[in-house]
Length: 166
Image (tube, rainbow, N blue to C red; front, side):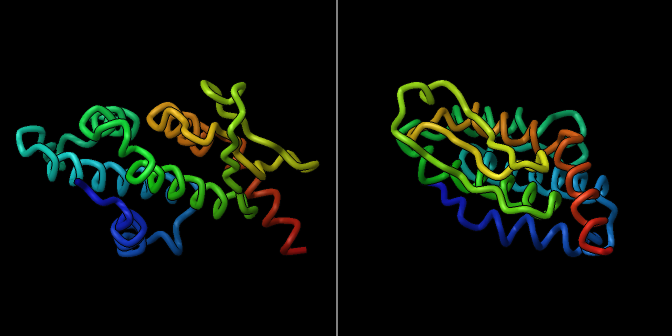
C-alpha cells in the first residue's frame, strides 16, 4: 500500500527550492498548489502507471481532481492512514499563512458524519476544524483546500502580521 507520510518532505522540498521563503502570500499558495499536484500525481503513478500525468498537464487539473482520483484508487479503509497526511499538510500551510495554528478536532458525533466545520476566534481567524472521527477524506480535503485558497486565510494572515510588526 502507498505511504504518504513523505508529503511534508516532498512538497516542502519543492516549494523551498522554488522561493517559498521570499514569495508573496499569493505566490506561496501557487507554489503549494503546484507542489501538491506534483506530489499527488507521483502517488497516483505509483499506484497505477497507466494514469501517469505529465508535468506539462498539471495546469489542466486541480488538486481536488487528483485527490478524488487518489481517493478512488486507495481502499476506503486505508484513507485514514494515507489521506490524513494531505489534510494535515494543507491545514499546516493555512496555519502558516494566517499566522495562527489550526487544530483538527475529530469527534464521534453523528452530526459531523457528512459535515466539516471551522471554528473562528474573535479576530475571525480559523482556529479549528471539526470533522467526524472517520470523515469522508476526499470531501474533507476539498473543504480544507477551498478554505486554504479563500481570501479569508490570506487577509487574516496579512492583518495578523501587520499587528505583530507594530
